[in-house]
Length: 628
Ligand code: ADP
Ligand code: MG
Image 1 (cartoon, rainbow, N blue to C red):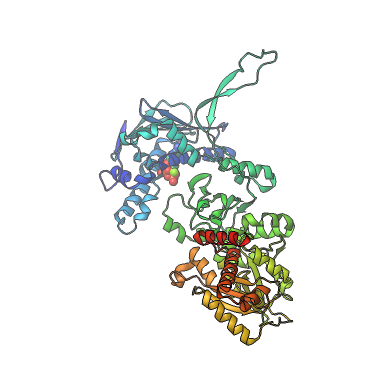
Image 2 (tube, rainbow, N blue to C red):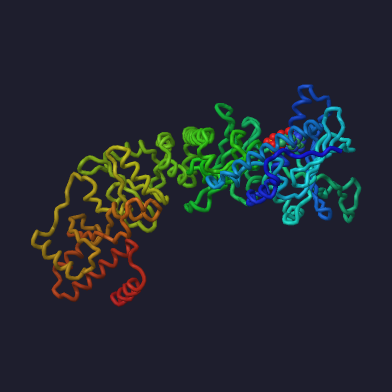
């Protein structure tokens, strides 16, 4: 038996490893299974080029828990190691990783982030074990070796009786890590990190029901057999060629990734690039609701089929974190801190590549099947609008396929919309006025009024739409957006024939005074307008600018305006050509006038959705009294 001392400047590195990798202890299993996978794939390669004269067969990686003996075994049938190789790769090479870690540890004061994600590969086993053994036999014709190390820099090497090729790692689980002797915990880790690794991983056995033999009686139990319990799918969809996959395959892979998601994805994008970096993956567009916060962190990041993280912030542009799916790239480092990732050049290229791919896919969906694209618009618009706001490159592409639906279910692209509106909706400076509603129900009376005048009304109801309109107004020329209840339409849109007021200037003056005597609420600015006689007597509008600022404050962008809480401000448009308004003016008793004004004002508020609570109750009571 040979003994030796691992060459390191600190007496005992392991307590340090334990302490500083604390939050990530569980990754030891991922590291050891990665090594087992590498060893198996290397053997496959060597046998395929004829350098290893072995029967490759159908190798497995097996995980065994020995609860009583407090041991965890990771067994592979890969290329194994000779004594020389153990000395080189375990004692020297693997340990250089640990040494590098120590160097970083010395600088920990400067960048504490790096510690938590630093990869120690094989030595991460010492985070959970106080003794580790390697029993290995190389595919080369050399005796098997048994290496063992109890956590001090001392190790021993001796011959072993192991006969079959491959490596067995035995972890003597430390008293503070006994959770890793629980079957449930191991299953959890295997499902999290190893679900799509390329070599089958066996963890225990399971009972499988076989078909009944012919002639079996009804009451006879079906025969069963014990089979290997393989926990992974070694060939997940993203590793295959798009040409070999049908829509159904993509959908079933989606269910494999998200077993708790019952809704089918809307469509998928298969990513596949090998220059200037390597990347494969599948992204899915799920049905999205307007609640942006709940749907983040669903994209999983893999490195050569090993799960790394589901926090893809910084790798995928923010607006795409609402998508789901998998990204796999050998160029993404397994064990580094997030700040390092974000500064990494390869990672930045990945981000812009993904943005481009998503834009191209959307564009081809739009071109090839516009009808289907329109039918999905409501579920995908939030991602697209968010992308247009946050990524200029995406804006340029999406500008061609982003849709503007009307309240009647027609869909325009931006250019189509401009064309359709240019003759009927411009203001006195010939600027295009786009009317929109954000809530078809609440703004119903305003929508109807606009449609009666022959105007087109869009339906723009996503939570970030006011930001997008702001962007369109500044980046495009000669266009402005106005909500249907934002301004009085006749003031907004240029009309050839102006309405003539039935009232003289004196009468208007007197009407205004009378209205102001009753409506003392400072929140209302009273404006007299000559409209069609069948337009409503009173209409309440809210200036577009004020309302939009308020909305933008609520949806997050508010801080930058530094305006604090904005006051409620409304216009009360009074139609001087309406009969009821004439009555208000000409009524003899002040009491009746007051009642007419208050009732009309409340009706206008009701129509704008402003009448609530006690005021609404009083209004209803008053109305009953009047119809009695
Ligand atoms: P890395 O995997 O990044 O090379 P590790 O510390 O995980 O670093 O492993 C160090 C080396 O030990 C590996 O490169 C490999 O040569 C050897 N090794 C580890 N585990 C095995 C195994 N199961 N079979 C064969 N060789 C292994
Ligand atoms: Mg490794």
